[in-house]
Image (cartoon, rainbow, N blue to C red; front, side, top):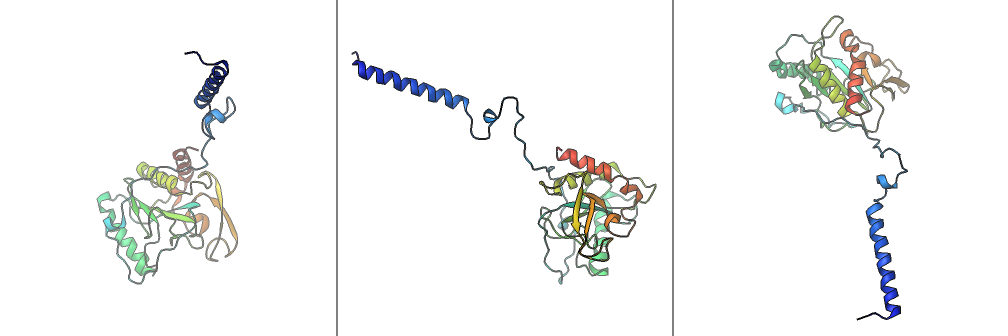
Amino acid sequence: MRLPQTRRARAVASLSVLGTLVATSLVVGPPGSREDAPRGAPPPRSARHQGPRPAIVPRAAWHAEAVSTAPAARYAPAVRAAVIHHTSTPNGYACASVPATLRDVYAGHAHGRDWDDIGYNFLVDACGTIYEGRAGGVDRAVVGAHTKGLNEGTVGIAAIGTFAEGAEVPEPMLDAIARLVAWKLDPEGADPRGTVTLVSTSDESRFEEGTTAVLPVVSGHMDGYPTRCPGAALYAKLPDISARAARLQRR
């Protein structure tokens, strides 16, 4: 049956429109897709930079005590910097003995100094094992007690051992610290190789209370407090740790 001229014209027009819509749907992507970008432009990049979460031994595994009078954990909006320490305990240990060392450090901090908990957020041994330190959640910005005046917005990471000038810093330890830094720093924060501005909360730091301190994002304890911690040997490795963390964050 032949369509009347008018109906045939309408059918042809409808098929033409349908063809155009199909062709368009095959070419045009959703907003923000590569098809919307100018020819030759690079794909859009996320502003977030975060390394993968490393394996972390929980407090329960090293039998951290709980002080009955300990206040609830406090939290900062984000982790803006990492402060590296050493525990000033003997080197040359068997890594299987580390839980006992952690309990000793805990006792010194929680009871000896009345801090109600271990001061460091994390501790790393010579074999590269990362241990949860201060309570409150490894994935949260827990305010520690590791650097007077600059605990707010920093993560305290202690290398288990003593790293004065001439000491060897084990490669697995350096690697683990870098991985921890790359994961814990604010994904939208500063480059680990850069600097950060913090506000001191205590005159006992190197900066008067209420004044600003410009510090490396990966700092040594001595940068913010009058001490030799984390030791000259480990302090000299901080630029290397910063560079490794930046690579892990794909910067």
